[in-house]
Picture 1 (tube, helix red, strand yellow):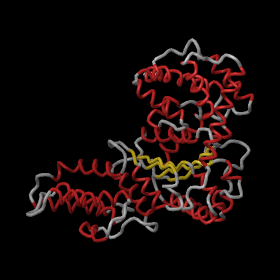
Picture 2 (cartoon, one colour):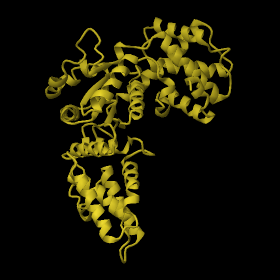
Picture 3 (cartoon, helix red, strand yellow):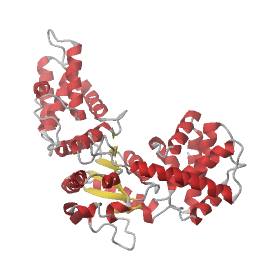
Length: 434
C-alpha cells in the first residue's frame, strides 16, 4: 500500500487530531510514517547499527543535534517506529519539570511507564502481564506440588540470567505466583489484587514499603543508587523474552542549560554515567536530543569536565560522518523537494480532517513558493516552521482565502516564526530548580 493509500485510510477524526497536534508544534508519534521524508543517510546507518551491532550485543549512545524547529523530536519518533518494527523494546522519554535528568530514579520511572513493544498498551505493567499470560497454560490448574515445582523452576531460570537483579527476578516470580496459585483458605481475590498492585507499583518505580515487599522476597525499592541496575535487569528480561534489545530516546536534554549550576552539574553527571553504563551494557541504544548550544555554550557539556572529557570530540569534524556520535540534523536540513513532499502529505490530511479539496488552491507550485520565501529569509532548514506555515495556509484556503502573493506568504511566515520564537522562550525557561 502506498503512502497516499494509507493516508486515505485515515478517519476524519484521526486526521483532525494529527492537524491539531501539528498546529501546537508536537509530533503525532503514532502517525510518523506519513511524515518520513529525507534524513535517509542518518536512518540508513542507524538501521545498520540496530541490525548488526545492538541486536548482536553492542551498546552505544548518540546525540541528535538540531536547533529548535529542525525536527529532532520528529526524527526520534522515526527512530522509535523503526526500532519497534525491528522487534526492539522502546521507551521515549521527554525530559521535563516532572522528569528531570538530575534525578535518574524519576527518569527510570518514566522509562518503564513509557515502555513499548510487541505487547498491547504502554508500560512495564503491560509487559509483565503479557509475560505472565504466556505462563498460564503451564501453571493453571496444577496441583500444589506440581505448581510449586514449576514455579521454583521458573525462579531458578530467571535468577540464573546473567545480569539479572535478585529483586527483579523475585518480583516476576511473585507476580506469577500471585496470578496463578489457587486461593488458600481464608484468602480472597481482593487480597490477591492488593498484593498484585504492590508488585505493579514496584515495577513502576513507585515508593513501596519494605513491609509490603517482604512477602515477595523483594528487599530494595527504587532509589538513585539502584535505578541503573534495575534498568539493566529490565534489558536482561527483555532479551529473555526474545526482544533484540532496548532503544531509549531522551528528548529535550537541552533545557538543562537554563538550570542552576548545581542542577546542571548533577544532570551532566547522570549523562556521563549513562554513557559509561551504556558502554558496559549490552543490547542498548540511547539517543539524546540537544541543541547546538549544548556543545558550544559555556553552560553546555564543556562546563562539566567529567562529561566533556568523554564527548569533547563530537561535532568537531568539518565533514559529516554518519557513523559519529553526533547525528547533526542542523547540518543536514531537508531539501526543497523533501519539504514539498511533506507539504503535500499535510494537504491530504487537512482535506480529510475538514472534508474539502485543496488541489485547486494549495498545490506543488505553491509549496515551492513557500520554500523559496522561507529560504529567502534564511529559514529553510526549520521544518517545524514550514509545517506551521503550511497548516496556516491550508486553514486560510479552506476558508476561501488562498495566499497567492509573495507578500501574503511573507506575512504568514513572519506570524508563524513569532509563534515559534514564543514557544522556544517557554521551552527554555528554568523548570527544574524546585
